[in-house]
Image (cartoon, rainbow, N blue to C red):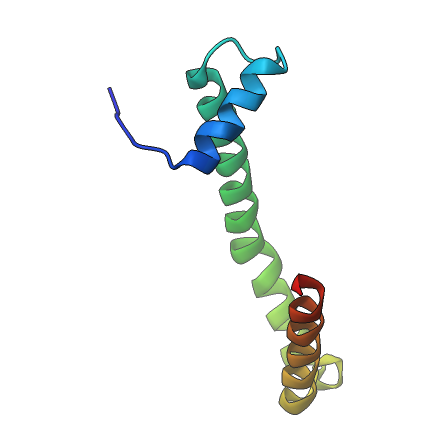
Length: 88
């Protein structure tokens, strides 16, 4: 079966999960994490394959629903700066 190495952060996290009594062994913790990752990836695929094409078609029908590129970049920059400020 698979073998992998974990850094101290994840070893500590797994130990904490085991101490909580929620899991019986490290394999259960890893499987729970993989299930979450699988759910996340499936949701991402649904978003990419279902929601995005619909939104794009809607935008093509009515360009006024779009956001000017300069505005989008300004919003992203503002969010980035806010995250940097929070991290300090």
